[in-house]
Amino acid sequence: MPEDDLSAVLTNVAADARPVTRTKIANSPETRAFLDIGLLLLCDDLLDHRGPDLMDDHDAGTRLFAGLSQARLIERAEHEDARREHPRMLTVGMFRDRWRYKSRYTEDLIAYLLRPALVEHTIHDVAEAAKGLPEDLPFADLVRQMVERVMAVTLDDPLWGLRTVVWVALPNHPRVQMFLKAQYEEWIAYWTVLYERLAGRFGLQLRPEYTWHDVAEVFHALAEGARLRARATGSATALSSGDNVLVGAIHMLLPGLFVNPEATTRKP
Image (tube, rainbow, N blue to C red):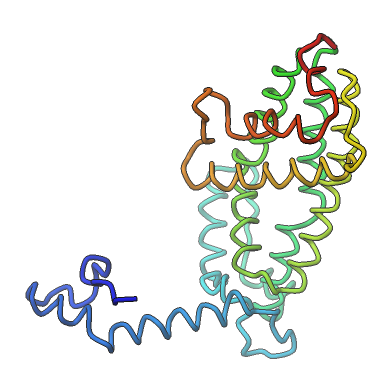
């Protein structure tokens, strides 16, 4: 494919040069080479990263956290303490008492961010919302309210966005893989039970080639995609019908999953 014009993309390269010169430098083989090498290093540091050498004092740990110096941690802690009734008064000495090497701190930080308790809290939130749905709620309203809740508990949570960055940036990190696998299995197990229970309100019958686990897998995949799209664009995509894309997708899938999709039009 022909090489693209980088002068419109690279706003900082040769910023003080004359326009003609800047365009020439931006599109030079050397500029492109520097950028290609940078991408290779990012792949090494993030996508191919498999964890630090915890015994190496010179290993800075996961490159994703290169900016997390002790000084910055203490500075931010002091900023947060100014708004707290009971300041925590964190010090560098306290940090060093807990983590000798930065790599150990960043590994703990990953584990803290991806810890099961956060997933369990989110599942509990969704479960409470599901319990609160009236038994006589029409199917369309039930789907809409559940989707709104599922989207809200993640999109309104900054830690969900941070977890997404970590698992996308560090797909080969063993601890990230371990935590994500456990998180995924926990969500699927919960959805399997919930969908079967909610469908039972309307007497929906699965086609013989599918299981409720299959339904959970499909709807979970749809929800993940809808959340990522909403995170990137700022809001959930709406179909021409006016429905949220996830709500619309669920309705579209009903005839393929159930032998009696018309049951959703009856009162529970």
